[in-house]
Image 1 (cartoon, rainbow, N blue to C red):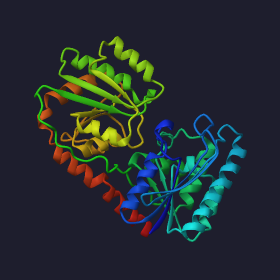
Image 2: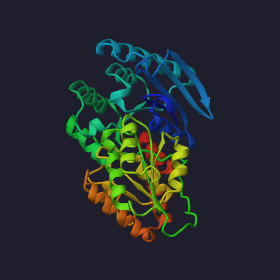
Image 3: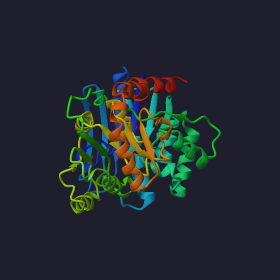
Image 4: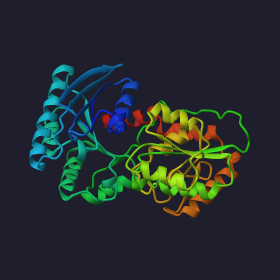
Length: 377
């Protein structure tokens, strides 16, 4: 099949890797043997998108077509008109040069397309598929105009997908649709795989936390819980991987806790580097209270390590006593207790079995097969 995957932007480290989930799914389809174009119209502010730029390149078989146009901040009607025109022009260019696709697959439809773009795609002799990832949809905090666009996307799509059951239920509540809504998880990059742990001192243990350093991710809770649990145990350490607005305040908190040598802030890392860190880690921990899917949990499970997470998240259903444990959100004492329990029972977790289970559910092969089934319906 030939699929055009439309995402928010081209993922770059300097601009926060926006578009990484979309591009990774495009690569998943490519690796499954499909012809794939990854397309985007990046309309963030001039602070992020520094100049006008047209992009066309072949990245080892993945065709990339894009447009950078920093128009964020314009009045909404003008913004939508420009974005609509640019996206339609981009899609027409791809079709002229590559032929008519079997499917156009839009990710984050409320952020990447407009109503006129949906109308345009519906005139084409191909399937329209949408995948929603956005946390604001899951929490039902989107503006009325976006609810209208969501209803249109659900109504016009040949298949509408959410990355979790919790998000799917919110889409159904917001749109009142009676259509079948699919659930297909985010794919785990091939960079992540089972890594047998090297022999080390029996008391040595490490935690890792990964994500944007923003308030909802609650890294300050994880840091406080770690200090409470292991202040007097120098054999235990933690790495916090990521960057964001709370980097400075988190560094200050760690210094005040006198944990600079035990809680390490690594800054932003590429997927490959995150995979290497998890491969050297004994447990993944997250105190986040706002996840649409929770990709780092899956990445950790694929590498063969158990996880600790806050209750009432989108992937609670996947937590078993063989894969980790949950704790009440924002409860430092409960998280500290969970981390101590994980340390004390570390020998009870079978990393190879954890990885085999995760691969069977979230690997490229598993997700590609599910998407091909949806495209073919």
